[in-house]
Amino acid sequence: MRKLPPLGALRAFEAAARRASFKHAADELHVTPTAVSHQIRLLEDSLGVKLFERQTRKVRLTAAGHQLFPAVRDGLDGMERAVLAVQRSGRSQVATLTSTVAFMARRLAPLAGQFRAAHPDWTLRLDASDQVVDLDHDADAAIRYGSGSYPGLVVEPLFRDRFAPVCSPGLRLASLQDLKQATLVHFEWGPAARDDVRAPVWQQWLAQAGVEVADAQAGLRFTDEIHAVQATIAGQGIGLLSLTLVAEELASGMLVQPFALALESFQYDLVYSERAAQRPATRLLRDWVREMFAG
Image (cartoon, rainbow, N blue to C red; front, side, top):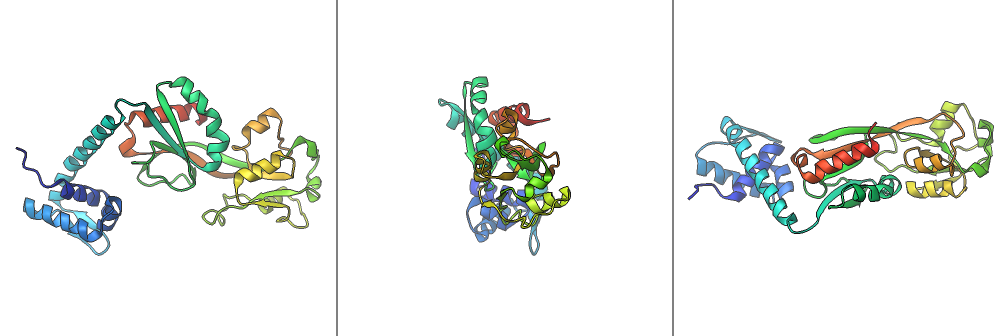
């Protein structure tokens, strides 16, 4: 018979050691910090050694804690992999990729059939969300749009986004001066990006182009980026849009980019958890995303 401490105490210890915080461990385990502290105290009493040095806002492993942590972490990781394998056995394999609503609608959804054709034994699950998704449990990988800094995750840069004026060829914009009479289509960035210089707006582009218009904020304003794209495609005005999101319309001639000046913006990255890096689904998505978008 194996003489092991309770699994709950080992889980609390592993989470607290990995996060260097009883509070963060409690959030992950959906219990209170007091409950985590109690479990770790039981474990320390059972082993007869001190595992953490308690500090005001964080905890630090002792020498004994450092000795125990890798074995507990690897053991729990192995249990998780085995449980997932059992859950997936006997049913179709599912690979979940998450990304922003706009990128999902404009770029990933049209490519879903290519994934299925290349991997008929897999089901591709596309999760469109502008919220941060837990990449340990809720998705196998993500294409994120932002600064490129995602602590604790594996990040593989894909490409940087660029914004430029685009419009229907029927508007017949011939010169920068035509912008003074044109209807400008605006996308209103959310609070998190509104004050970031990488979130381009018409005032920024017009200043760099050396064009003065009566009111650079007038025209059509949208809080949803996809709606701004749709209005521009419909010929309602000229939009300062992501060239990534309208790549197919530019290639087909449905939209044109009348002026060469483009503003660099945020970047797209393939992101996944270190713990998920060896999952078959994560490896499959990584190879597919690289083929579709890298370089």
